[in-house]
Length: 117
Image (tube, rainbow, N blue to C red; front, side):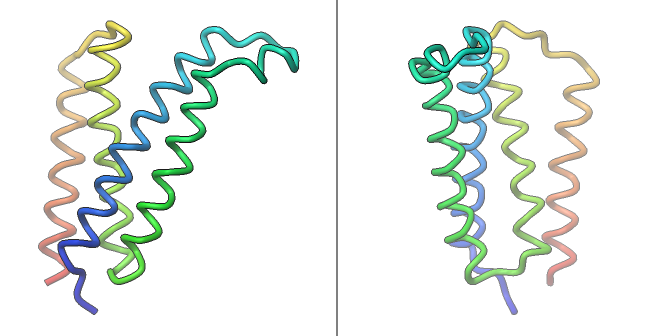
């Protein structure tokens, strides 16, 4: 089974949306108190959950016509976006080990793509 480019784009789009989910879950968690009212009124947490659910829809559409062994690792691209959002919105530091990890993620995705041929 060949994996069409459209399937890869659906999965990558889902991973980008999921990375926003992670960002908003973090923002919501910072304001979270352990009681029902706080949980029910925490819009950041709700947005994070919504983005995660939406990313699952994109992922499901993507894997419908492609090879799971090729597509699933593309979800890891979301961690690259999460790194960027963490820097932009949370002022987290970008370090050499984080850049090495990003390089390894990209290299792994390339190798898997080559192995699918």
